[in-house]
Image 1 (cartoon, rainbow, N blue to C red):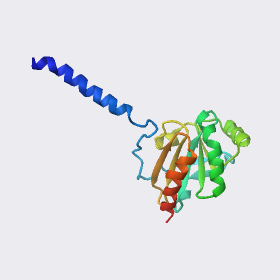
Image 2: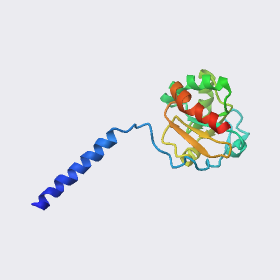
Image 3: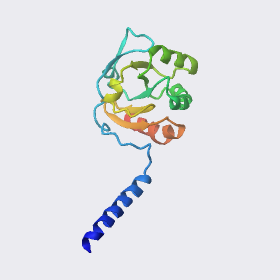
Image 4: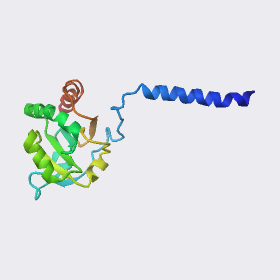
Length: 174
């Protein structure tokens, strides 16, 4: 009799785990890099490929790294929000053109506007891999010591800026 109940108990446990999983927000994917040093990288600038940009160039500043691509539909959705955010000059906004053809990235910025202080290219996706990028767009908030303090998955929205990102920036700038 007891052996007959084992499959039923296992099934009930699986149903509970499935139900719990379905209640979670799929856009909230915890990053193992939060509160860890941002990966060190050196990459060519999109606008000036002969010039390099390195993560260490930002030490001493709070900054945002926005991972985007010209082929990314959701990036087009967040772009007007980033354009408005950039006008406020709250922190440097660095763009990472991910797995993209540089000429396409340049055309995209020319067409929709360039909110970035600097845009770098990541044609092979290695920098994105080091940051644990699941897909574009993703945005990372990095503090003065080069530590990742927040990861936003998906398009940045006005609400995300107002409720989460800007308050964290203000706190880190103290």
